[in-house]
Image (cartoon, rainbow, N blue to C red; front, side, top):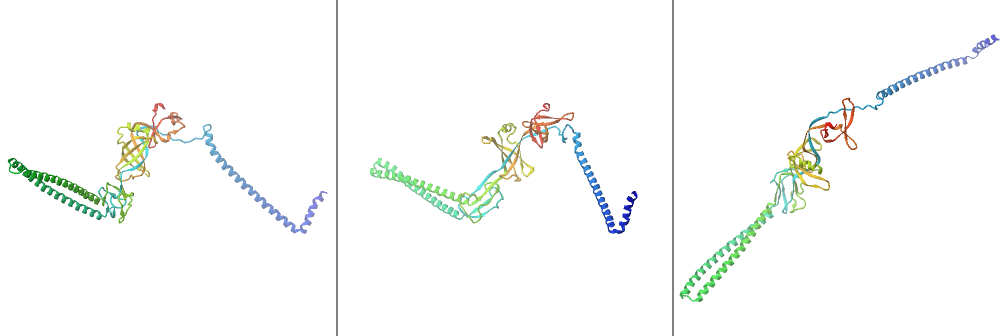
Length: 418
């Protein structure tokens, strides 16, 4: 039975092989395909394992690096690097800071005082002019004619006065002669040489001639008054003629030109022909809180305090001046006091209307205690600093701060109170 079992497959194989060659070939091809598939599957598995190992290694390194400082600082939280500053003593200026406005020393709106045609403009808009320079020339011919007429009327009045004086002199001579005759007739009348009627006629003539002299003198007085009126008319005509040449009333910088050559200029027009501003020296006006007024008044030499101006955009080149005015009232609406400082401004760096930063120096704190401004921390109701103790630990201490200069804050508390 065993033999049969063994033989059957052998016989079967022996018989089947020659009978089905095609099936044998297909079996061999199937075996080869199965081997290739198993090889690919093994390669994919090996690559997947390698990639997984690399991912695990990277995660271990990343999580390990992050967990190391935490483990080292267990119980203290995350470590934050800090920088220590040194408390020092030095002289610190006491300063008040404000925003100021530049104002010209004087501003002149030039207007014509006579009407006429503008013949010439003697400057270029924006040019610096000096006091007395010719700015405008208006056609002087109409006013020159008026002056000539006034002078002719004056000469006429002067001739009338001279004529009146001559008449007065003549009538005075006649009256004097009548007086001599009257005195002589009085003596002759007493001697009985002439009749009384002749004497009375001579006395009447004397009185008439004296009245004529007084009338002549009144007429001369009227003529003299008329002469003075004509003299005033001449002076007025000369003044009006002088208005045809407009000169700069002060040294300064001209602004925009409102009228050009050839146009008709009206007297006292609402629009000025040009505006001149005097900017050397120049003012800077600023305001400080009224609580600082007493500090300013108590400072030695409050009139003439050093005032520094910093122009926005040019902070490295400040301008120095002196305090020249502390206003006499406090503005009740704002609670501030108006101050004014004067600057020479020879280089014309300060421009009228410009806004600048003002620093007013009241004095100097000698050997004041200062700390870096970054070290001062602001709490809800107080300021404090972190102080490093001898054991290299820190603690917060409350301080009273003062002014801040060059990133250094003044500590007004004494070191013993720390």
